Length: 265
Picture 1 (spheres, helix red, strand yellow):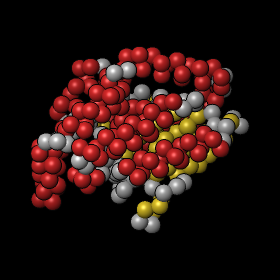
Picture 2: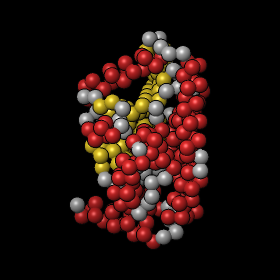
Picture 3: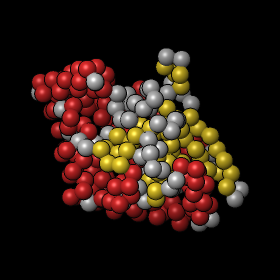
Picture 4: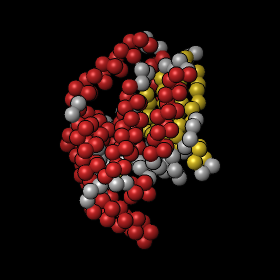
């Protein structure tokens, strides 16, 4: 773990467990408040923590989960979002992309264990994982448009996961999707009762670690090449649109309006 903010560790807390004598890494995402909110420091630290994990242990599989059952991650801290300008927006969104891309490039399968809210940047992190397995408390969404920001970069992974039509809806409406709908459209590969969730994921890990390590590494690399072939031009465009968005007054206006509504509610 690295990066200490306000007396609490932020980033990833790393643990390990043995499944059939193979090492499985368990990474708990620790953000701000109950919703595990993200900012640039947390994303930078999480990327460093993940790099340290791969360098220090011969893991065969990785589980990423929220540090509490309330949320995998509630996405980007709106306080940070409200402070972004055209000059700082590119740096911020690039850090989210770096962390998500690092997950995708890991040489071992990565499982997102999802409970509670999985929103915005949090959903992009989950989408970067190979498996998304959750319980009936899951609520997913891409509500960025509600605060005047487009969904960019790893949001494009949703197109491959659930299709163009289904992906358009949360990005254009900003609506939330409950666990059963997430399962129905394929955003969750498995929907499991809370008391069985951990053991179910352990069973998946058991299947994974029994496979050839080199074959899995090559398969992951090939899948990544397939994905990149379909989205090679989208990353630069996404960063540009995100940056351009902060030239307008709409973003700051809608962000302030959102905060005022929360205070009123």
